Amino acid sequence: MSNKMKVLLTGAAGFIGAHVAQALLNRGVPVVGIDNLNAYYDPGLKRARLKALCDAPGFELIELDIGVPDALASAVCAHQDVTHVVHLAAQAGVRHSMIDPYAYVHTNMQGQVAVLECARRLPKLQHVVYASSSSVYGRNRSLPFRESDPVDVPGSFYAVSKRAAELTSESYAHLFGLPQTGLRFFTVYGPWGRPDMAYYGFAHAIASGEPVTLYAGSELARDFTYIDDVVGAVLGVLDRPPEAGVARLLNVGNDSPCTVRHLIGLLARELGRDALITDVPRPGSDMLRTWAAVEDIRAISGWMPAMPFDEGIARFVAWFRAYEGL
Ligand SMILES: NC(=O)c1ccc[n+]([C@@H]2O[C@H](COP(=O)([O-])OP(=O)(O)OC[C@H]3O[C@@H](n4cnc5c(N)ncnc54)[C@H](O)[C@@H]3O)[C@@H](O)[C@H]2O)c1
Image (cartoon, rainbow, N blue to C red):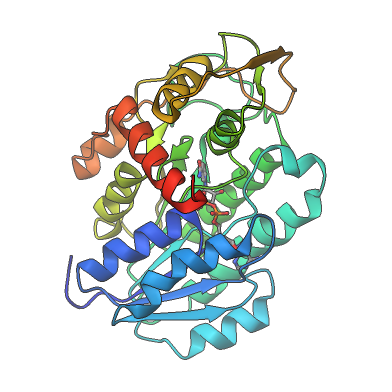
């Protein structure tokens, strides 16, 4: 990475954000982190992720809500030397968007505009890399999902908010020349992961002898992607911006889907417990299968996912046991 880089990173206390921040700091790149540490899931986990970052030279945290444009603009104003923006803050979680859709409008839609409004005024800005999601493929059935596929049939309001963010970026590239890359992440898992995600909840249930709820029997499958591979994808594209005026979209997935039933078996094996499975019908918000075609990102940065699924789950469980004190 260039030694003249300075990164503004939103969602720095989040699962992916904290790992990306650490990787940048390890490479000597200064990071200005932004996060509001909200209580969508345990803020204690967010603070624990931040602990290691805050001890590192070159890291600064600004606690604010990206959905409040004036607050964001005045904070960013003090960092005119930022060269790259990595925008990962979001109201994540698919099912919660049925309960509180306005949180998705506020952070994922208004927040995207607020971040881009700041980015376009930064005099040294070279590239905005932001998080999108495999959810935008919605009810598409043709696998693997390709960036060129139509994305007009969202299955959740979360997907709508992520697609709206992509379209916002497309317009800012066109209108203001901002080079941008939207990364469509596919089910990211690993140490320091999100407690609201299924694999984390399954680990809890198995460890405490409670039943695990499985949707759609053996049909449900995900392209589970290990956190270190995701960090590699972000860093790999960060200093390879598209030309001015272009907002490109790239899948970041494992290109090797696994059934959720298989995931439950691996977790049970690593935890040394039996999994009690309750089969129930799939809710409409959940996709049946995901699978990323990754030729496009490979062509740009040479990136390929590397972590075998059983090894990634073993690493997650080792961290989970230590963090949860099991
Ligand atoms: N983890 C996955 O499997 C996955 C898959 C697809 C897409 N994504 C996307 O990747 C990004 C990072 O996801 P993650 O798994 O690290 O989620 P996360 O919830 O752990 O991290 C998001 C962070 O953003 C912060 N945040 C939320 N709203 C904010 C606001 N209004 N202002 C400031 N900060 C705010 C949260 O406090 C949190 O620390 C998100 O954009 C998410 O939608 C994640």
